[in-house]
Image 1 (tube, rainbow, N blue to C red):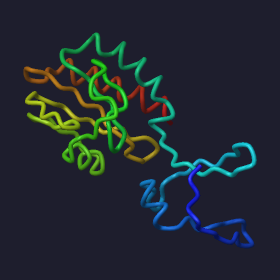
Image 2 (cartoon, rainbow, N blue to C red; image 1 turned 180 degrees about the vertical axis):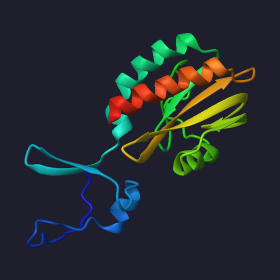
Image 3 (spheres, one colour; image 1 turned 90 degrees about the horizontal axis):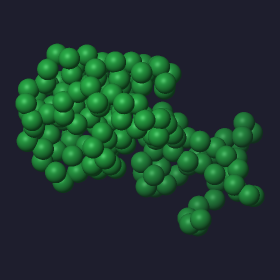
Length: 167
């Protein structure tokens, strides 16, 4: 474990302040959840990512649902791809357009997205995943031809499954 050289006192309610530079380094923002656990004789704080904790289950559902749509499906958290029907772009950073759609809780259909360093000149449909009033990620469908109504229905069903699984 890396020693930061920072020492903090615990107040009478058992609270400590995590220094700004550590929060920034770990991408922890006000209101984010953190996991607290014990590892040997250490208290460990770790940024909690709801989507990451169920990544394997998400991939399993995605593998089943992807058989019913044309194109590729990607499930993201608020920063990167966490599951992929074609096993591509895993852990690649998502387009800022998608991040805005997640934060604004909006769906969108369009053409051309960037995932990681890859500009994908395809039609896309983005649907935010909202759990317990929190926008936590998205489902992206990408296809070489226009997105069909049946594809939208299947993505909506996948979104409902993920929502109930995460709730």
